[in-house]
Length: 248
Length: 248
Image (cartoon, rainbow over all chains, first blue to last red; front, side):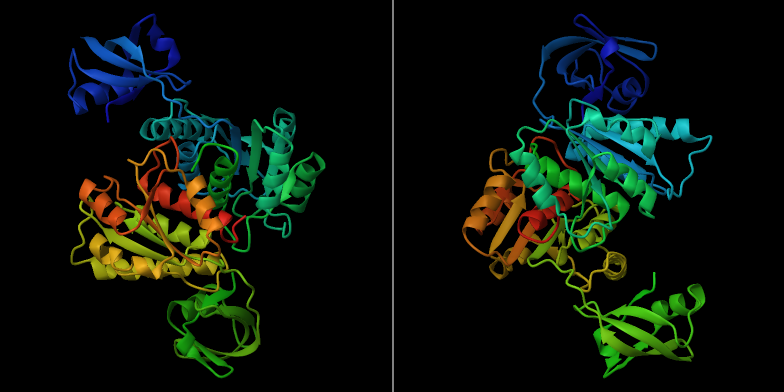
């Protein structure tokens, strides 16, 4: 694919500088040269047709021929707060959430999270952001979703006011279904910002469930089958972006 | 988890024989013994509370105390025909489709499928069926979805008549959205059997797309973002089981 990500600050007027891995891929793997045309997106909502002009050292300079932005971003801002999951599950969630159209992923450290954030956490967050960038590139999104720094549930609660509604997917909730919650939200009018909270493998503690409920989160069930933590958020995001967004 | 899968033929009256891996897990990992109670499901829709009685050689005999079947199966039979995907993606699709509530997965060999079915195919199919069984066990389903033998598109087309509708998720379809297709299906009345077809990584060839369309499949888009093959089926199944089934 001849589609490249370049951060917004690398655009100067009609010139754009491609460096690092993207330049390497362009030169060494795809073997492109001066005169070749590529698609470049800035991860912040813009996409351009670019002609490659100058190759110097590790960098490539291109010239913007035209803006080619196509609307591919969901009309609703959905954040997915995902309880830290083991191994590659977190990476799976970030990749799939990007494709589905989530606007940001908030890794959540909870009482029962098994992976303890340690010294490798900064490197892990860098890796997560890179997975989001790669997924955005592949699925033709023009915006790269933010993978935020790891936060705790009390920290997340303090941010509830940024959203019009907070849905809390909880295995102990048996009667309030997503169908009725979404019907209520639709009846309230245009929803622009929504936060989804999904627990880690061991679920939330009763104290955690109480904390989010007291602060206005609505607990929801996804039906009779018990979804794994990495499945729950993706299923919920799919349905919500179908009902309130542009998926399907 | 003290939930075990035992094939229906191992039930004789009120006695049930647990053997193989499940017996090993029960004895060696969980260290259960005579008098302990466990949950046993037969993968065909029934679940029982069982008291363990006799341990002999590699097998364990239990006594059915009561049937405890809880309705966890979707009221609609959804088959997912998935273009063969590389590496672990097929396994991911089978695991997640089971959790979401798909009734059967049909691995599909198409013109552009990259993994060629070879001598290891029988072993691969055995492994896929085992992944479905494990996923059913974990998500508390009482039915284990069938993972069918690999089939070709012409073979699949001959089976279209088994379904009330066939939806064909195609990257070239730009205007017919899942929203309108599901609205039409709902208006037609109660849908009981639905087939979803998802192409492999390279998509369908024009001849393949024509073949399924000529035989009544409805091509559908999932919206502006390009979903990977292993994401498309799971997103589609989630939305369909939400709209026509019991998810959410």
